[in-house]
Amino acid sequence: MSGNENKTKFKIGQITPVYKSINKIISPVDFFAKISNYGRQKNSLFLESADIVTKYGNYSFGTANPALKITGRGNNFEIDALNELGTKFLEFIKDDFAFCNSIHYSANQIKGTLKPLKKKNITQEEKLKQKTHMDILRAIAFKFCPVKIPDMPYGGLIGTISYDFIDQFEDLPKNKNDILNTPDYEMYFVDNLFCCDHRQNKTYFIANALLMNNDFQKVFLQCEKTIYNYEKILNQPMPKKNNFAKKKSKIKVDISKKEFINNVNKLKQHICSGDIFQAVISRTLITQYNCEPLDIYQHLRKLNPSPYMFYINSKNNILLGASPEMALKVKGEKQKKVQIRPIAGTRPRGLINNKLDFDLDAKYELELKTNKKEIAEHIMLVDLARNDVARVSITGSRIVDELLIIEKYSHVQHLVSNVYGTLRDDLDALYAYLACMNMGTLTGAPKPKAMELIRNLEKTKRGLYGGSVAYLTPDGDFDSTIIIRAMQLKDNFAYIRSGAGIVYNSNPEAEYQETMNKALSCLTAIKLAGGIEYENQNNID
Image (cartoon, rainbow, N blue to C red; front, side, top):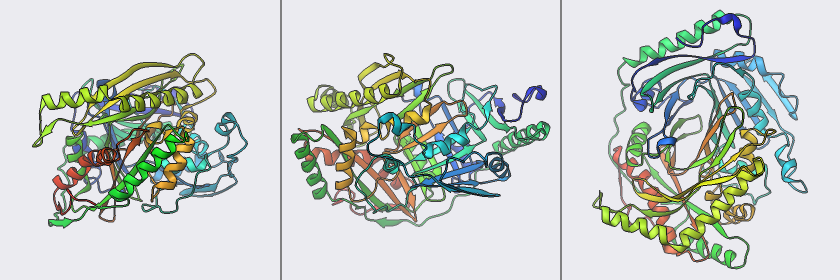
C-alpha cells in the first residue's frame, strides 16, 4: 500500500492518495460493470480511453461511490453529500461560500444562489474574473492541498458541463424547449476510483485521505478498507443482466431533412452577408432502446474506439459516448500548458458491406485533404482555437504543432490540428474553460454571432451536446472532451444529436448526410445491443 507511510508528517487540509497496484490490466469496462451493478447504479461514472492516438489514450478509470454531487442551473447550485465522507466534506467547506447571494446549509446539502452576472459593457478580463459557478467548483476542487501526487488520475471533480452553460455569460436568445431538462453542470467529487494504466499495463485501486481532523489513523484505515473492497470485487461474478423482448421502433427527429437543409441555406445567407464565417448546425434523432445501457456502451466502444469514451449514470439520465475530440486540456507542474485540438472536416471510411476497402478509404482521405471547403473551414477553426488559447496564455507562448493531419474512426475520418500555450500565472483551468467555451468546432466563428444564429434556428436546447465531460484534479490539471458521438438515455428513449459545419460553399445535401454519418455508430450500437429493429433507418424523414 502506497501513500500512507509516515502519517505524522501530514496536516489538516491536505489530500493524499493511498493506492495499491497490480501488475496487469483488468478489463476496465467489466470491472466498472461489477462495481456499478452493470451500469445501473446512479451516480456511477466511467471514463475510458482507446489507443487511437497513443498520447491521448493512456488511462481508463471509474467509480460508483463519489463523495459529493455538485449541480448548477441558472443562478442556483446544490452540493449534495452522497455518503458519510461527503457529509464530513460539507461540514469542512460550509463557510467557504460568503461570496454567494444566499446560502443554506444542512447536514447533507449546501444550496445557494449566485449574484446575477454582468454580461454587457464589461471587458473580457472583467467577465472572466466575476464570481461564477466556477467559484463553487473551485471551492470544492481546491479545498485540499495535494501531497504525494501520482502520475495518473487519482480523484477530484468529474462530470459534465452543458453547452447551454454559455447562457450564464453571453446574452443569447432564449430557447425554453429543453426536452432533457439538463442542468448547466453536474460534477462529482471523486475520492476513490480504480485506474488502468494502458502504458505500463498496471491497474491501481485508489482512495484519497481527506484530512479534516487530527484522527489521521482513522482516515487512512478507511482508505485501506476502500481499497480492500475494490480487490474483493475483482473475483466477484458479473452482475446479472435484465432480459428484454425484441421490439420495433421508429427513429424520430426534432428537425426534418427539409428543415435542416433550409437552416443550412439560411446560414449560408448570413455568411454571404458577412455576419459569420462559419456555423455548426445540429439536429436530434430520437429512438427507443430496449436493452441494458451498458451493452449499448460496449458496442459503441467497439464500433468507435476513441481517446475519450464515457458512461455517466446520473439522477437525470445516462450519458454515454465515444468522442474523438478534446475540448480543453490544462496540465503541468510549475507552469500549466493549455491545449485545444480542433477536429473539423469529415469523410466516411471506405466501407463496402461493412468491410474496409483500403483503396476507397484512401480515396476519401485524399478527397478530404484536397477539398478547399474543408481546408478553409478547418483553418478558420484553428485560428479560433489560437485566439482562445492566446486569451489565457502568456504572450508569445502559443504554437500550432500539428496542422491538418488525418485521424480515422470506425465510420468517419477527420482533419485534426493541435494548438498549445502556457497558462497565465493568475489563471487556472476553470478560468481557461470559461474563456474558451463553447469550442469553436461546435459553434462556428465569430462565436457570439454563430451561437446566436444557432439558438434561433435549432428547435431544442443542445443540453450536453457540444458541452463537455471534464476532469479536474486538486493540483489543477484538467482534461475534457467535447460531447459528440454520444447519446443520452432517459425513460427508455435515446437522444442522439449530431451537427455539421456550414461555410459559404457548403452543399446542403452533403451537410445533412454528414449528420447522419456521425449518428450512425450510435444507432448501430443500440441495434447491436439487442431488442430494437429500426423500421425507418433508411428513410428517417
